Length: 375
Image (tube, rainbow, N blue to C red; front, side, top):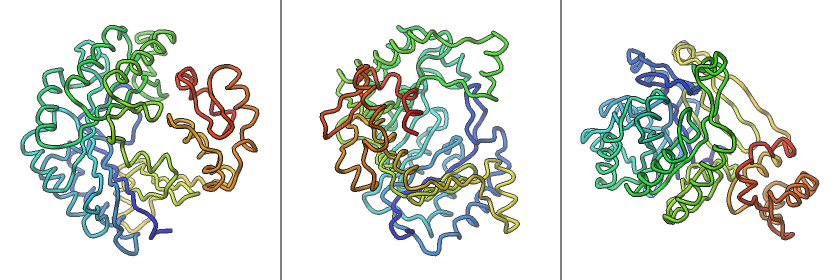
């Protein structure tokens, strides 16, 4: 299977600070661990018997751009002997607007990075403050111009349904990002994760979610505004200008195998998902000591893998083609989910012409609540 792998994810767990809504694997204010991280990553990469040529490489976090221009160059020196992007590969780095400078642009180009996923979340001062973000609207505008003028594909993350956010504020965010020319936009409704600062504030009543009907209005507004600006909603949360879909995410949704390195990173061999331990310090310590870093192992049955493939397919705007699904999974769609699909069609959540099953806009709005019937 190793020879078939053309995609890799590298987790960079460092941030300047932890935002109140975030439950990702990261450490804040621990720049002293950079060198140990590079060393441990080099050790973990040795688990591959030979280098792999990649169609996509994705550096996520955390905030990979927090390593700084020289740190990013160092990171690619560590990766180079094992993870080798092909000449036409998509190479993405997640970035905080405050980290981006002319020196960053030079470092990105020298490392072969051609796509930047920018953690904007909002351009509204009140929303940014509520979300614990440390940049401002002017920072986003400056960085967007710099990156686009430098030839990068720019993807922007936006959060809607943030506490105190109004429909008008969400609308202005979307209009501003499309006007700035981002080629790809990911729109996420704020999730309240147990263990985060936001979860505690909600429990104490000091921070409250927006009403569900307002959240739905915001998401429908996002679909309408982005569609009218030439973006295609190709997955529940993801919108792209023509030919600008994220190729790395497409690999995930196609259930192709991928490699992954770093604390909390999950790799997939086509049926088993193997996740590294989340603690950055334990991951570093174990690798340097020659110990393993495997955390959870999700060994799916063929049927379980097929059910996951079905859900990932239905999250995509094009939906699921019955014949292709059988060829890829060995299972018939209707053997896995005939009754739920019939119920969704009756409720107006899905369309089914006998060959393809697709969620409607109504289905997209509540898609997360549908999957338990399949999984």
